[in-house]
Length: 107
Image (cartoon, rainbow, N blue to C red; front, side):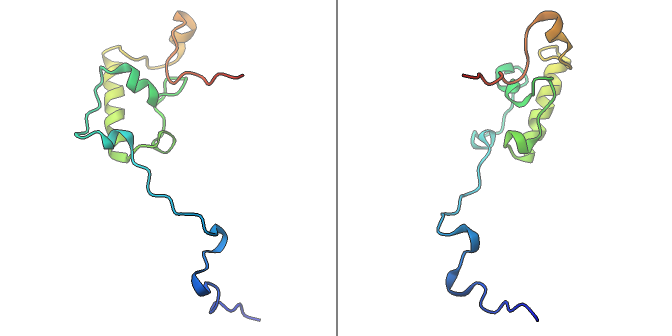
């Protein structure tokens, strides 16, 4: 017995989505600020793209484009070279100064 696909999407059927509106593509916050400039001296902005261990977050998790992720990576590496950002999280144990996004507070 074969599956009949002839009337599967009859009369504009959207399947499981129902009548929910389509969402547009989410734009990167950095892309919206033209021209594209990611400054390695802006430590507070760069910490948004690091996790609590000091690693650079992936672009899917941060929500930026590939072009912006390359600029962010270059800026973070420059800031590390000039000792504005740490390479690892070992300094947190020694100095007590945290890196990365602040941990979410629990109520």
